[in-house]
Image (cartoon, rainbow, N blue to C red; front, side, top):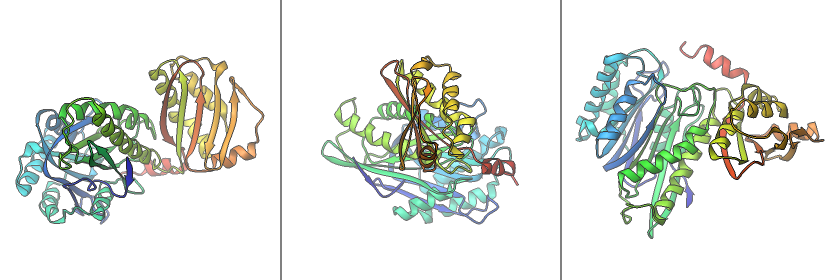
Length: 407
């Protein structure tokens, strides 16, 4: 597997376009279209929040019932959530507009929205934008980056990843983009993720792989503990690499899964590292837990602890907060066995051994915790299972951003 430059257009046959439809108050691009030259088998995962935005309901139906999809249209500024039957009707109108422009079926179009919850979409602006988007479609990396920027809300930067992998002697590509900075929590959050690949694979195997990967990537990040209404992650595979079709869980399948896992994990980390107001990515690895489930619970408990997140912002090696977060997680472990080490580009320092503080330099610890990213390695010494979760520090700016988000 090779990491390459690019994003949503890196794989063969995928194009992206974006423009300003006037949905947001700013004059930045707020509408994007992803299009494949050939129909794609697709897989998706969606929010676990019982309050599901209209696009989530539409896309879930499309992914589950349509054998192929070929386009995804996305708007920012308004989430089309809590909008009743009118919101669902608007999704259909959007899909029909894309289908008419691109000469495909509405059932082959996914529709995504992100932004403020409650208002109805300004459909005159949305439809005008959709009709103009096909002229913006390009296969360039610049078009991919512009599309990644167009789907942002409070994100500070576009988020893209792409890799090549050898499958059956054929080079295949996996690339993607995502957005998300607030309302981010395990079980998916206010997050949109789109991954494209030119691999040839059976739909059911794509869904199996993607579902398992989501559990170890996007479901292991948190910014603020809020699970959103609009979470959507979609992967599209158009088969244009012309590799021998992946129809069973063999070496070719595993090679593809490694590439897809890398892209999904790196995109997830980019979201966690761009949490609203944050100054650093905060990673927690739990080692040697009794079960995989326990390892995940423990790791997520640490990165979601507001007290721990605040300590990371203050560059304070407050190990008691980490141990406390482990203790109320609900997972099984022995506090008297726990070792804790903090790591960053500035070095590594042991903070706790067998549940007790060790003699360490506060000055060195502060230097290590002043970097980006910061990593906590927690060894519970109870079993053979490990898991990693990603979050960010908690800063003053998080409150400022969310106090006036609508205004």
